[in-house]
Length: 594
Ligand SMILES: Nc1ncnc2c1ncn2[C@@H]1O[C@H](COP(=O)(O)OP(=O)(O)OP(=O)(O)O)[C@@H](O)[C@H]1O
Image (cartoon, rainbow, N blue to C red):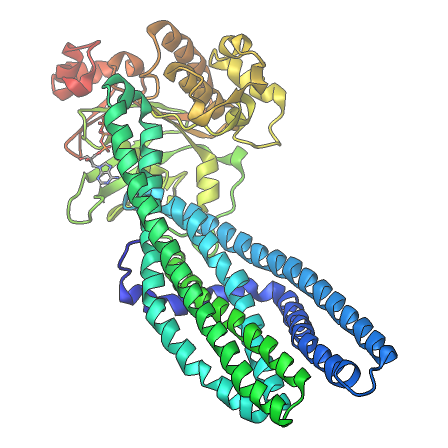
C-alpha cells in the first residue's frame, strides 16, 4: 500500500466493498445470529452496573439491610455475567467462521478468475502484485467482515444502550455526560488522519520489505556468486530500520490516542463524582445511581475507542477491496463461444491450418504477417527461424493463448475459436524449454495431479522418454518430492519429466518449443527416439534451434521477421538455396545465433 493512497481508490473502495457483499450472502443467518448474540452480550454488560445500583440502594445503603435481597441480586448478577460470557463466546466463533468462509470464497473466486485470463493479462502484470491481491488483500478485506462489522454493531449498540441507561437513571447528569460526545469526536478527528497515515506507512514499508525478501531469496545464487551478501544485508537492514520506525510511530500515535481518551474518561469520572456526589449529598439522587453513572462513563469510552480504531480497518479494507475489484472486473480477453463444438478426443485427426494469419502483441506492431500453411494429420513439422522470428508466437496462437488480428486457425477444418479452451488444451500439448514443475511428487508432476491417470501409465510415459533411469535413481522413485520448481533436479532432468508429462497426458497434437535444448546429446538422442515413437500417432510441431532435430520432418516452415518465407522438406529447401540452405550450411550450430 502506498503512503498516499489515491483518493479515487478510496472513493471507489466503498463500492468495491459493497460489490464483495454477495460473497457474504450464504452466511447471512450466521451474521444475524451474531447480531442477536451481540445484543444479548451488550445487554448483559449494561445490566451489570444497574444490578449493583439496585443492590446498593435497596439492600445495602438503606436503613434496613436486606440480606436475602442481596443474595438474589448477586445470583442474578452471576447469571447475567454467565449469559454474557456464553453469548460473547458463541458470537466470536460464529463471526470468525462466517468471516473466514467469506474470505475463502473471495480468494477462490479471485484465483479462478485469474486462471481464466488470457496470456496478455499476465504479460502486463507483475506476478508479485497478483500474489498480494490473492493473499494479503483478501486478508485485509476479511477484517471488514470480522473486526469492522463486529465493532459497528457491538460498539454502536453499546453506546446507544449506555446512553439510554444513563438517561433512565438521571436525565440531568446524562445531559452533562453528553457534552463528552463532541469532545470525543474532536479528539478522534484529530487522530484519525494521523492513525491512517501511520498505518499506511507501516503497510507500505512492510510490502517493500516483503518484495525485497522474495526477490533476494529467489536470486540468492546470483547474490552469492557476485559477492553481494553484505550489500544486500545492508539494504535489508535499512528497509527493516524504516519499517521499525514506521511501526514505532504507528504504535506511538495509537498509544497517544488511547491515553488521551483515557485521560478524558478519568476527567469525566471526576466531573461525575463532583456533580453526582453533590446531588447525593443533597439527597437528589441515591448513592447507587452515582456508582452506576461512574461505571457507565467508564464503559462509554471503550466502544468509542474501538470504533475509532476500526476507521483504519475500513480504510484499508476499502483500498484492498478496490484492488480485488479491479482484478475481478477484468473480463477474460479470450472466452469460449456459448456453445462450443462437442469433442471426442479419439476422433480428432489433428489437421492444422493457418489461413492468412496476422498477429501482434500490440495490434499495430505485427510479429506474424500473413502466415498461411497446412499440417496434415500425423505429420511431423519443423519450425525454424532466427531469434524473434515469431516461432513461439505461432504456437501461442495455435493454443489460443492470444488471438490473431486477421486470418483464421483451424483444427480438423473447424476454427479453434469454436472449441472450448479446455478441449483445445486437452487436444494440444506443449513442452517448452522453461519447464514448470509444481510442488508435489515426480508422479504428481508427470500426470499433473490427475488422479485418473494410473501409475502404470505414468511409469510407461517415463520409460518412453527414457526418464525411468532418472526416476529409478531417485530415493523414492515416482514418489520423490520435488522442491520449489524442481530445484532438486538438473535442467535436463526437469525437461525429461515434462516429456513424460506430455506422453502421459496423451494430446492429439504435440508442440515441442525448443524443448531438447537442455539435454546432452546422448539423452537428447534417447528422448528423440521416444518422441519419434510418440509422434507417429499424432501431429507434431517442433521449434528447433538445431536443424538436426527436424532434418527428417515431413515439412519445415522457415520464418523470417514474422513472415513464412520458405516451406518444404529438408531436401527441397536445401535445393532451393534460400534462407534454410544458408542455415543448413551452419548445420550443428545454434541457428538462432547464425
Ligand atoms: N508476450 C509478448 N509481448 C510482447 N511482445 C512479445 C511477446 N512475446 C514475444 N514478443 C515479441 O514478438 C516477437 C516474436 O517473438 P517469438 O517469441 O515468437 O520469437 P521466436 O522466433 O520464438 O524467438 P526465440 O527463438 O528467441 O524464442 C519478438 O519480437 C518478441 O520480442
